[in-house]
Length: 254
Image 1 (tube, rainbow, N blue to C red):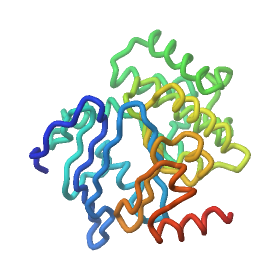
Image 2 (cartoon, rainbow, N blue to C red):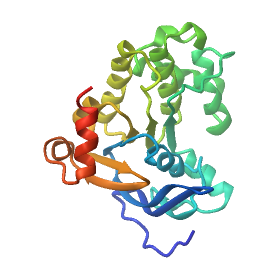
Image 3 (cartoon, rainbow, N blue to C red):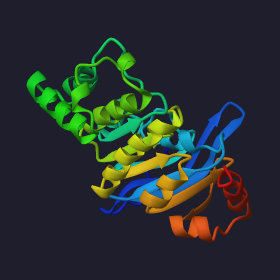
C-alpha cells in the first residue's frame, strides 16, 4: 500500500481510496473509495456478497486489503502491527453474532478488554462497564451469563463492550440479522441513541427504517463497488441507478 495520497483533513475520520480485496478468484472489493466525516452515520446496504462486510472488516484490518489505502483519524493503516493495533483500539466493532465469552458474566465480558488493552484497574473497568450497561438499558444483567440473556440483550452487551473502550468510530456488521423480530427494535434503539449523541458510525444493515431515521449518508454496494452514495431521502425517493432501483423494489416489498 502506498502513502501517496495527501493526509486527510481534520473533519474526515475515515478515508478509503481505491480499496481492493480478493479471496483467490473472488473479487470482493473492486476499487472502493469512501470518506466518512466525524460524527456522521453512514449506512451500507446491498445484496449478499456485494462486499459490504468485507469493506467494514478492512477498516479495522480484520481483513488485509489486496490494494488501496485507508486512513483512520489521519493515521495511515500501514503494515506494522503496532500501527494496526493503535488504530484498532480506536474502533469498536459489533458483529452479527455477539462473540461474547460464554463462561464470563456480562460485566466480565465488558471489563476484560478494558483491562488488557486500555490497562485499566479492575475498579475503573467495572465502573465504566456499569455505565455502559446503563447506557444500553440492561444494568440489572451485569452478573448474568450470556446463555441466560436473550439475543437482543446479548447484542446490547456486545455494544456496551465496544463502547467501554472509548472508540472514536463504531462499526456495525448486520447487528440485528441474527435476532428474532421482536428483539431488533431494542438494539436499533441503542444505535439510534448513539447516532443522536454524535458517534461516528458505519453500519451494514438490512434495516431500512434505521437507514431512514439515523443515516446521514446511505451507500448502496453491488459486486464489490459503491453503486450509489447519497442521502437517505434521495436513495428511497429518487434513486439514480437502475441497480439501486431494482434492489429497493425487491427489499421494500417485504
